[in-house]
Image (cartoon, rainbow, N blue to C red; front, top):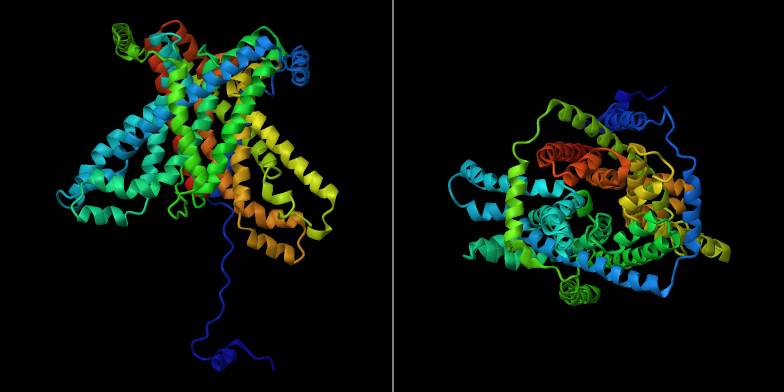
Length: 587
């Protein structure tokens, strides 16, 4: 007789309960709905780019592309070109260092005063619970809102504005980097301070220390590794920003690349590009080593808007001390080298032009024709950013895994151990070098340079702009995603290998699940960056709002410029909110 369920329950005891299998989760959840929405948006963007209608490729441009690629093997290394390349490299580096130094200063001050912990400690001892919250929320929201506007405007727009005020003085380039980067840094620093453990901070406050002194001796020392690591990450970004500003006449390597491209002297272009790639490679490598040595961001990452709350940092690391020493020497040298005329900030001419500019801005131009055109261009710009991040995300994913050192190198996850021959080792090393080299070249050449090259082949429009943005952000995303792969927990992967799983199975069931969520967060974060950078490719003829903004600045049509900027800022905020909402779902 078959033993039934009631008999088994009686034998096991009254506490026994039947096993209830969990229900299969529905396929229609938040993640799949956002995925479907994004796929629809990509199809809409491709259609808006004109891929399905008309001619989009300039067949005659392929000859120029062939000449450009062939020139990569024979860069002009003559004495005259090197005499231009070396000072231009120093100018680009000095702009980036000066801009980063000022942006860190702005970010530190702005980060303190835009953090909740500051206002909670400064105003939190007055009134009841609801009153306390209202007291500190009001100034916190005001400062956060004030910082949101400058960081939404791309540094190229700031550069064009300052050139109109101060001329082609190095001051224009330094301020164009410092102001938007400073606002971005302030937000990140505020988030870092808010996520820092507060036990020591409260202990100092309870001992009678004021809010600033308590923060100076408790929160800032704890958060210092994160703050330092992010400052060097900003320096990476500032190098690329300085090269972009060269395209609008600020000097440096970007300016030399533009002049050589316009005269079709591709050997000279590659001479300057190689210097730019070398400079980016040194700064990228320095920042990556510092990031790993400080061991920050392992449980979160400021580059995706997530901040670690479980740090295991080493503030006394020798490389960190060396980096700080180099910075202490490099910052004054850079300010001396650029020779910016800071007296112009307080000069009569700057005040008069600023007053005239402010007067010409208002009231904004609300002409129906302009508003209709801005609406159409906003849709084009949004489509450009979606298409760009799709290209960058897919390309970054494909190249990031071979660019991860812990996969195919000897001793890596896919290493066959004793069975691994010399050929396998060489193949893994070559794959790593080629993929990392491709990512470095991709991100070293700014969006503007990529746009100038892509426009050789494609007719002006949002498609070449999307391709240029995609190629540049592919390099950035690929590098960040490779870091994610290098930080995966190897224990479950080795367990899979121990069970006889193939490398493909280890990747599909071990590596991919651990990295996909973080990689998606990076893609969404870079979408925000792509949205801001559409103005760069627009200025060189790729279409969208950027092209119109450049024309309005050049023609001094400031009332129309204000209207266009409002559309541009609103579009940037929309993408920021969508990106943040999707990151919360996929996290």
